[in-house]
Length: 431
Ligand SMILES: CC(=O)N[C@H]1[C@@H](OP(=O)(O)OP(=O)(O)OC[C@H]2O[C@@H](n3ccc(=O)[nH]c3=O)[C@H](O)[C@@H]2O)O[C@H](CO)[C@@H](O)[C@@H]1O
Ligand SMILES: C=C(OP(=O)(O)O)C(=O)O
Image (cartoon, rainbow, N blue to C red):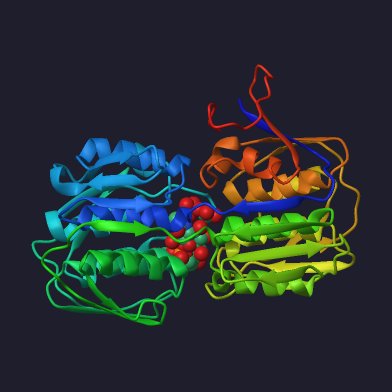
């Protein structure tokens, strides 16, 4: 078993360049199946989910190579199967994008149910509703579902709830459908806009992405091209929070600061000083933090994926904070782990009540999902003694190389295996 060891660290200082967005990358990689020519994607992070997609690519004939430059080249011209192995599909969340990306071209897709981080309930009813409205039939089986359509036809789709995944998936399916599709109550997330920009660059006709109404006019053909994925606003936000843990100053470079506005506004509220340039955000902190209240919401609200690292930060703020989870009301697995470190946190319905300032003491804790992992990494930096975090595979789902990233800022973090051989996070031995 691998685990991450964290020790109380002095103020973190430094500048880091932010990797490409995990969530955008997962949509773009699947979206390449819609193309009829070679596509090059820049900035795709080397995360666990990427490696699964590479294996799925091998199974279905989507040729995928990572060049020494880091660019990923995909060739969809040899696709020969639309069966996505249930085991692989359920080892990450965004495997559902293969449905939207393969359906119009091939007429039938068989795919395992989505996996990914487990917050008790993560329905896909809005994805299914969109496919059905576009003319597909969906049948469910024990470990997989089948979506088939002789021809997809444009439709008006009103989402019952705002969902980035279903918005992207409906857009993918509509791109090569016959006629016009309109998506109402669409998600505004940067990852939706990024996917639309990418598809438009290949020749799709999508307008309105980033607003509540997206229009897609079906096209019969998509070309190839080169595209750069947007930076990961969630990793960037978590690193700014790390500056607040013991006082410090961290600059995240290669970011789109507007994508981080709800995060930086909240950090200012709790006492961090924020400086913004065109492509960077810096957080300075004296380590003196004020308690706050926050509710997560869909973009541009405060991201549910930043709720866990913020909770870690608020264990260090003076006073009582309340964190309310509105996107995934049961996404609080990290609280039990923070309690093991001595944090004064309590869960009532969909809110965490945090009394800041309780001394934290090192212990074994478990990362149940990628952001819970980030939360525990941050908490460990403020904890006396040694914090050992298991569940490293979850952290690998989101980070290219978390150890190296945190070490570059002065954090005392190391990766250990059962044999207890620490390594310094260098590239030769991936997380
Ligand atoms: C791979 C990926 O991009 N993952 C992100 C994506 O997940 P994902 O795309 O799965 O999340 P959604 O945006 O779809 O979910 C938003 C809300 O809609 C609900 N919903 C969603 C789909 C559906 O068919 N029915 C339904 O009711 C969900 O329960 C949730 O309450 O957005 C989440 C919310 O920002 C993030 O936490 C995840 O990191
Ligand atoms: C929930 C997340 O990921 P996924 O949707 O891929 O499980 C996340 O990135 O925080």
